[in-house]
Length: 273
Length: 266
Image (cartoon, rainbow over all chains, first blue to last red; front, top):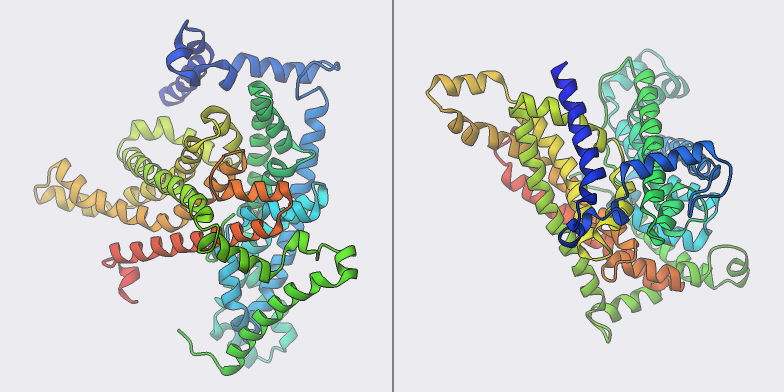
């Protein structure tokens, strides 16, 4: 109880500093970081949220009422599409490649090279090629999600115990039965385990895409607000984005727990954004 | 290391040749050029990229790439050192002090739930377009990676180990210095390869926001001017730098942690 109280007190202190320290006369001269021009203030941000929620007119410089929801939807939709496409294709590629040894050996050095490449650096390239629409954002999310899912699925396929496969074979399992009842469930476990990371990757792909060359979406709004130095709008869009990210990653984690309640941990592949 | 058959080696070579040949020739086909993204203006050509790479590293424009790569590398490294130090100290402190843990851990957890890259615009707003923003981004990213590992390392220490030391007459400081710090450091080192890779990504994204120097800034400039060759060259440079850094961190980790059972076998 005392702990909860002190946590709340800490939040209150931080908010109070954020709100009132910038109002101390002359403070911005030696600590420009406290200028509300840069960091806005909790009261302004709350007021902006309230304004967006209640009014219908065009009051904001960057964010107008109704606009926030449209932008949120654009980001959300691209993220979910990229996630689904990336997870599906990553799973299939990982499954196939882990089961065909020679092909995997041939492609291995290239996979290692691609895995070492910071995928976020490819965002401008994709935007140059595919433009700034929904398609480009889905491609971006896919590009990042695919490799994360692929590498974990592939690691899972390679980690399949030979004795398990041999036992099934001795018991008379056909190749198809083996695939359906042993290989796919095992490999799928590894894919499910990486779902939260894949969701986070999908968000990163979409939002960085919007940062760099967006025409819509929360990431785009954030860059516009940054360009026009509208700190309040930036905070409003950023807070919304953070909530979206936390909720989506939380959902993916729940999905993983639900699908994998029968298994212990299995994350082994490499993955980075 | 498994020995590969000739088939595998031939296959690897074939893949490389086919990929490069396709990249070099397909964008020259007029139909593809007009209808698809296979256009030298979008994907450049391997020959152009190689020529440009030579030109910007050792050729007539030598220095261009080095300066920008150096700017990114420097920011990533400075950020890495500061972030790792902060993460390590914080991890140790929170593992030791119940009060600090109860008070701060929920907030660290909350911040770590948001992918750090999303906060880059805020960092840019506060710290400006220069090197400070890049370093701040890198510090922020590295902090979380190292914090969680150090915290885990310091908390995962078997109770029997510390109580044995106390029994043998070790003071609180002795135990801290000889048991907790080395054990936690091992966990922190294990996070370094990941952390340095993330730090570089963070720096590059920070440079996307109008920084005057760094590989991220050339990438964005190339995108805006439609110069696919420059874009490819900077992506390539970044890939080399990234894998070099991660490789070095892995090597250092193995060197420093050779006494850990995981590394004894190898």
